[in-house]
Length: 164
Image (cartoon, helix red, strand yellow):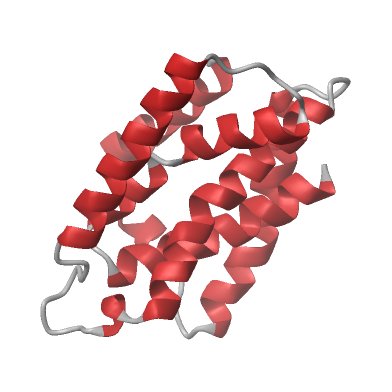
């Protein structure tokens, strides 16, 4: 479970960093590689079986995503050229890899339900990112701007997430 907690916290940081430097389209396309990576890790480490047609379709999907990602304008902000630096691309492609490792690690821990791990992950992220927010000179005043409808919607989303 500790692997999943560390992976989740690092993945959240990478997500926020990636969305700062890349467009949402590029981020979403790269994140769509997660199922492909999860299947690859499952075949490699968990010895799952994969038909040749499925492997062929995975290869075609991978090539299609790479062509779109590498051919698009990567920067979310046209004035910001940091999105085109190689280290940002490495960080961007690390996120689906980290999420896939988390998925595979959950499959190896059969005695613990995913909801328990998600609860601990959310608590760990809250304990880490609230202090980080204040350290970075920001605050949580956005919560004071919520009106009644915002709070109701927030409670509905949270309840539906728990029930799902």
